[in-house]
Length: 197
Image (cartoon, rainbow, N blue to C red; front, side, top):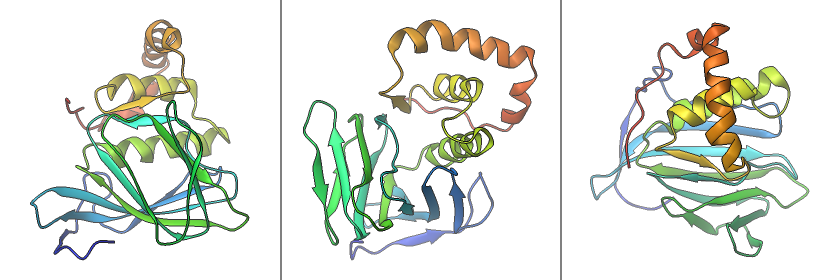
């Protein structure tokens, strides 16, 4: 991490205390270390992740946040939409700009460990906590009803590059309505309000 002066906030709406670890059951474990304020006065969510060989999130974008990852162990592969595969080794930092469609994965035979931050935090902790929980329940990709809800509610903050536009525009509203009819919305009764760009 940088040597900037940081102060720690020990509470979060999602859990009450840091650190807090989530696991998607599909090769990714993410620890929310804490919300910090850097020397410039910007809030950032500090994270650590462990990714099993070959695993990593699909193409996505944080529409209001910058994501930065420093490789602590292993080798990280990453791609920005439209660009070639690139790689980062121990000590190297990769930063994905706000709105930049990207993905990363473990490109080594050992566990990939990274430390990093998301600036500003926004709803990334809630969004990932719910997405990882859905993946664990389903054993892989999130349940379509959960994905439709989360991506629809937080569309001003997050975008998934692997979901075709017709599915997002036509199928997801139907799935959200079906989820409400089936009572799935109760799971999200305490969902924080989305933030705009």
